[in-house]
Image (tube, rainbow, N blue to C red; front, side):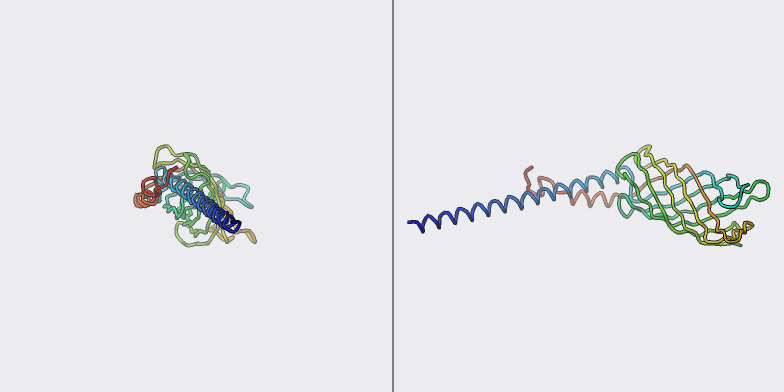
Length: 226
């Protein structure tokens, strides 16, 4: 009789444990599904607000820093292309045209081709600060002087409407040479600051939107009851 009770209690204990384990696994699965769906919906919001690709243009001012007390602000403009690897991370290539002026002594035109990684702090929000940095190729207008450089920058973007953002940005460029045309200074590489106002024109992402909608688990396709 005692043995039968022990067997019964053992069976009941095992059954309760199996139910508990099953409930825990289902809870973990539900939580995982909810989190995955939340992440997918956030990416969907990003694609709706912005997009996987962007063309950008900007205009502003530039100035050389260093041992040039008579340096002045002059014109600067940029055009470029961005591709979002992730919603908050893109790789971008830009062509930059700018002038460097030293009082009345010189005014030289330069250009640079910049490759950057850019990180958006709030990619799903209308307002997002961003930071970027990368490597560039600098040249005089005539290509008589060419130099490599590194650059870092930051800015803030405001989405006027879906697909169109206005941005304020600035970058610091460290030219790996002290022989930019007409600006030779011993043991001093040139540094250039550029500040501008620009527009981002976003497009693309429809294919990714379709994939996301297919991957989102709903009550219908997951048979989960909330």
